[in-house]
Every structure is written in structure tokens, then in C-alpha cells.
Length: 112
Ligand SMILES: [Zn+2]
Image 1 (cartoon, rainbow, N blue to C red):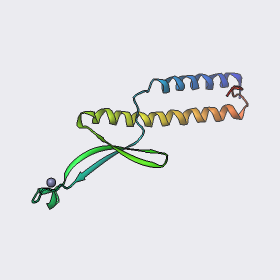
Image 2 (image 1 turned 45 degrees about the vertical axis):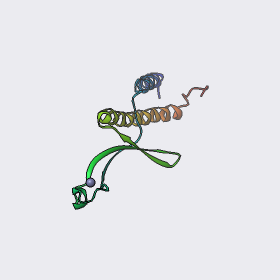
Image 3 (image 1 turned 120 degrees about the horizontal axis):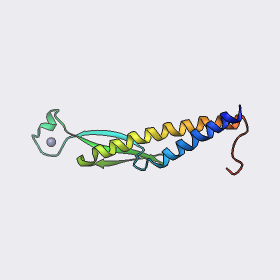
Image 4 (image 1 turned 90 degrees about the vertical axis):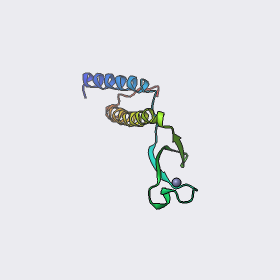
């Protein structure tokens, strides 16, 4: 790998790192839709027309899942955060590939 190629990789990596820093509004989780039945006798929900959907974001931490209710007025924001976290995953993967290339030619930082 030429010095020029290494330089290009380092530049690409810097750009990706910068992009990471500009994505503060992100949410790592899964969008969940729930329907439910209520306690009222004779309510239509007992004939198959359940209430909902209500939306939640499911997040997993230390192997435990937690679902947090999402208010209707926050739905768009939450969806945007979830989609941004996919972008972050993609950026991390790109950085990984660059770092693997750098590792191959021994062009990694010594102060990792
Ligand atoms: Zn009901």
C-alpha cells in the first residue's frame, strides 16, 4: 500500500469520525407497535378491534430489554433517532474496514 493510499484512508477516517460527532440525536433500539384490550365490558376491543397502535421504543442494555412508551408528538423524532443509529452503525463498519486496511500495512497509530 502506497503512502498516498494510506493518506487517503486516514482522510476518509477523519471525515467519518467527524460525521459521528455530528449525529447527537440518535436512538439505538427497535420500534414497537402494540395493540391492547381494555377492562371495559362490551368494548369493541373484545371483538377483535383492539386499541392502538401504541408505540414504544425497545432498547436492550446488559441483555435486558426495556420498552419506553413514545408519545404521539414524539414519534417522528424517535423514528429519526432510530434511523440515525443505523447510519452510525454503517459509519462504524466503514471505520472498521479502514482500520483493518491500516492494520494490514502497519500504519496504525502507536498511541491507541
Ligand atoms: Zn377496549
